[in-house]
Image (cartoon, rainbow, N blue to C red; front, side):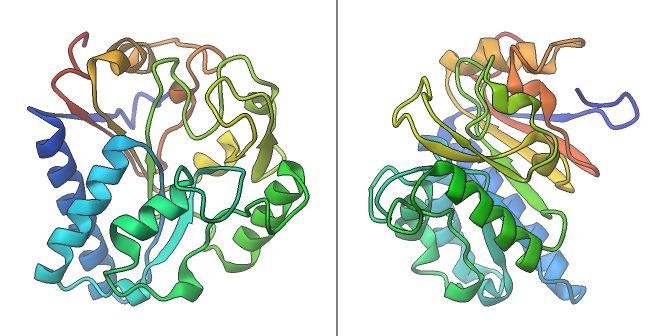
Length: 246
């Protein structure tokens, strides 16, 4: 849970469209500020419907900004384990929505391994861990996370043993309650090193999980979203339905 001296900020927007535009605008501002100070920002993306909306807004808004996408390093918090061109892979969706059009340097885009790269999810998790160790900055400048109706974030699901792994950067997940069953996810210890954690949540079906994640004393084993905070800031970007039980 968020420490009392670093409480989360909650932003509520009237619609999913307004939410996506606000998140994209905020990210572009952060990237501009970082680059103007000589810093090469590292961000971690998520997947899902609202993330796809954010990505499309990034593609639409980027030409009007000073962001140099060739100087942005891109990671992911989790991924579905399957063929690299599977349409449900987070990296594939981001590539189609905005990475392919904003001028990113392909060498600075780091998707999680696919089934074409490694034998299984555990090998993929270890490979991604090594990539982060060698090419990461030690902390994401911005980490974006969606949240499921069950309170899961990345591919850390309620009651799963991966919630208690604190000595690895990434872990393999099998038997996921959300298809596909095999996934790779960053661990709590890796996610909690992010400077800024942004939860991006749309829809009334997420409202209960949002309220529980923000409630004092919630066990991350029950609602994993309660277990991640940024070292500098934690922001919950919500649309009105997602915020309906706060």
